[in-house]
Length: 487
Image 1 (spheres, rainbow, N blue to C red):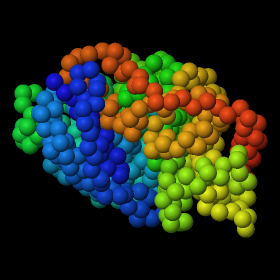
Image 2: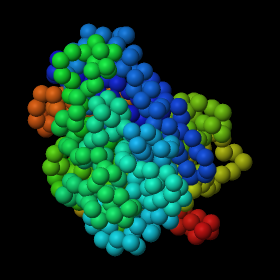
Image 3: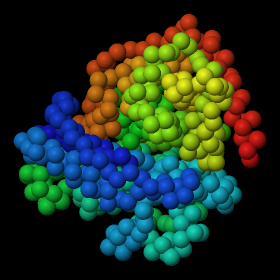
Image 4: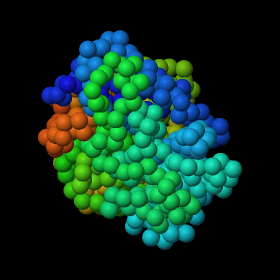
């Protein structure tokens, strides 16, 4: 018996096979067509691209690990959160999905909070343009013909689930990021839905992440050589899935993710909102658990942007920054290229370099970008602490965690040891596979979600702590000054 985890990202899909002991047996990936930006601050993607990449990744596993794939009995899904996938009659997609990093609905957020004064208490979160509900409010205002045809609204992984199983189902961690869920009760809120003119009929049914959400369709089972019954678990939103993959499911356990976006994640034993600091308070994928996140929208994406404008590859830039690093640089970077969530909740925020000189070169700019992202994560830590949340153990995941310099910056600025697990790139897919195992076997998630072997542990550089604290103070002072100048 084996289990399959499918991690649906905006840049592609990863598929991972594990055995009954949770050992990785093989993996494959397939790219998706990159999101498009029809206007500044917008971000959209065709849901068909996720499905094509899902089929492509699993087909590759069929070629390389046919025996293990044929033995699959449980499938788990992980996916990028918040995306508004609008379905009409016969589940036809009505328009491109409006993605998590789309900032067009800032006005609708304010209108929603004015229309429902207790919105934050119900949802546990500020209305932010990244969430799903404000996107629907925008569609209702600007694309009324499409809005009138909506029969279901699904998140990205729920759309892939629909094509895998034929079922409209979502689980708690992803549903919590819609702004339609009563997060404390783990149920859809009629009041929150009503603000966008929708009701429960427009929503998928809800299950826990480790529960069965449906069964794999017979034609897909035949395509991949499977037999018997193959169940599909509820799964998890990408960050909750990563937490399941690295075992951050108990109170105080967390991770820092340096992916396209950046996340500081910590598990909680109870629902613990802190809307004043723009902290995300969501359901975890594990029953009766919750989590908090500080989220920044441009982590490695900031280095992607610098790579594009300099013509140098990311690895070249980070390598050059590491080679010349002597401590905090003169240049400060605000990583708000796509607006920001934690702690500013400002979709209109924009990135800035401050302190450039004639001698500034790409390596120094890359260092400033990495430091700016590290300071943004320090901001997240600060507002989590304001909520009374302590992080007892922190692991690193995401593509940026391959940079030793970046991890050192983070450890020093967060003043915490950071553990680097093996196979960190597959945190989401591994977490999804583990949830598939739980759904198929009935195993207790707390027994399954163990921490992986640790490759190394990065300690804070105490010799740089004071210098980075001074630089962080300057960083914090820049945002209000620049916001006032350009607003």
